[in-house]
Amino acid sequence: MLYEVAREIEGRGGKCISVQVDHSKDSEVEAFFKKIDKDENGQLDVLVNNAFAAVSTIFNSIGKSFWTLDPVNQWDTINGVGLRGHYLATVYASRSENFNYFNFVWANFNVMGFG
Image 1 (tube, helix red, strand yellow):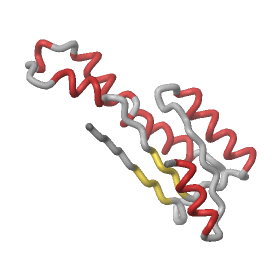
Image 2 (spheres, helix red, strand yellow; image 1 turned 90 degrees about the horizontal axis):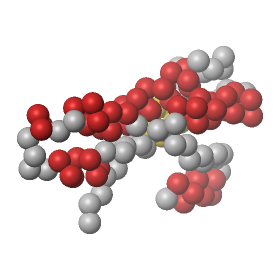
Image 3 (tube, rainbow, N blue to C red; image 1 turned 90 degrees about the vertical axis):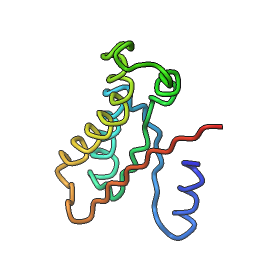
Image 4 (cartoon, helix red, strand yellow; image 1 turned 180 degrees about the vertical axis):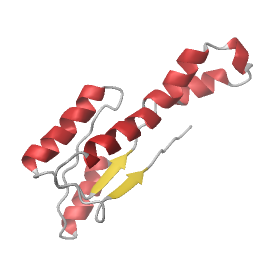
């Protein structure tokens, strides 16, 4: 789907650089923004954070009392990739010398599907 969206944007005359980054690896997130600074002079108009790693953890917890589960594992799995990754991406994006607060759109999509 990532590359389909990129083709659609370019088909309408826009420029799109689609990159998949593993938000569970802070170093990958940071490296992505360093690459944007280097290759695109820090210009980033839209950031789509679409990361969530807790589907199986939540699904496997259905019917269990929360106090019987490992609280650290539950918290880290549910919030580690989504919440932490979104925060880090936003921080790294805003650190760019050419970051334009007025043009920047932060699109946050969490898509979960069962079936």
